[in-house]
Image 1: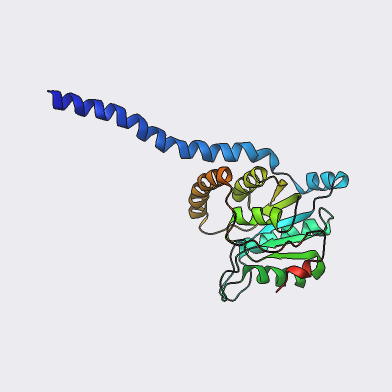
Image 2: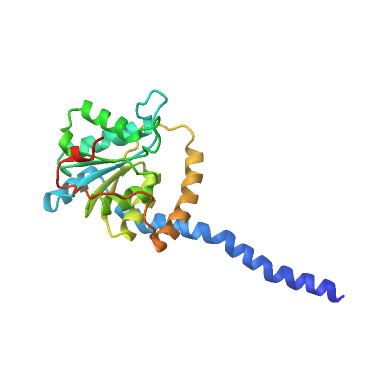
Length: 228
């Protein structure tokens, strides 16, 4: 009888704990999303804000390249939106951040080539070769490129986390969505984004330095200093 009572008591104590552990990730994900929803603006709103205080740069986050080395559909939409905002005068510089951690995988130079082909001046293009994650990209924008105010360009599902990280790391930012094509595999990206929101929520409390930092390259200078 005592053994049965102990088992019941154990279940009563464990189930609430398990329930809390299951609920917490959803609470965190919801908090990151709802707290940053007001930071996503339209092009018109960005232009109106720029008429008073122009942002330092348009930060375009990487999104993968094709086997032939050209930007993926998702990345191309981000770059097109970044170019559109640059040409509209939202900010005077483009900061292209992506993964260049392997010799055969070079997001940032693919991004640079695409932007140059659209007629953007090389000196206005800054490259972050060590944007291995959204956290790294935002951290390095602040620490390496001395960005104080940015317009972040990525797809809508990704903007909430990017803006949350920016806020926690002291970077003033608004986000503009680069929605375009229908992207295959979005369900999988949504699942990864859910997990990433929880990871970066914790990261923003700890605030570790990225794996790579390096010399300062002010965003107010010549972007060619960041080219390889």
